[in-house]
Amino acid sequence: MTKIAIIVGSIRKDSSNLKLAKALEKLGAGRFSAIHVRIDDLPLFNQDLEGNVPASVTRLKSEIEGADGVLFVTPEYNRSIPGVLKNAIDWASRPYGKNSFAGKAGAICGTSPGAIGTAVAQSHLRSVTAGFLDMAMMGQPELYLTFKEGLIDSDGNVSNPDTAKFLTGFVDRFLNHVGGAAKAKAA
Image (cartoon, rainbow, N blue to C red; front, top):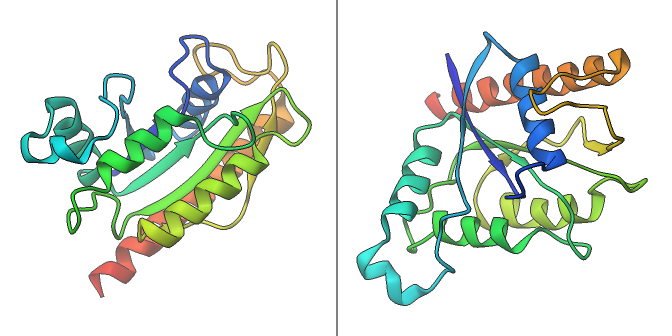
């Protein structure tokens, strides 16, 4: 079964992006297994620590390396990605030559109460993932979800059938993307 590392860029307990991640996992049940990669326990990136890597960083890198694909689910903070997400990316891509993301298939999505969802944050994250991290990023469909109270509950249940259909289509395309990247890598 395809294994997906899900990295949620918000560490808030009632995060709408965590709810979105759970909804995507639920809509893809039976087609992939998910590991929710913890990022709230990572120290701030400091190259001085690379000689004695903290256990939380070792776990982060291992979980990403063990996955077939990576799904980033991010909020938008001040028109960019949250610092906690950037910190996790910095740790997982280091030290030089040991980038845990390299060659992985990936996708980005996010939700916010604003009308443009997380479009600007996703644009910043795309430039990091496709450019520097050497990931095969899915281009379409893009998922900028305007979050309204009750749209997705804390268990990942989606109340609007049209939204559930759209999210299912996103999951389908992402899993096809991950499968295609795996075939290309094996060839």
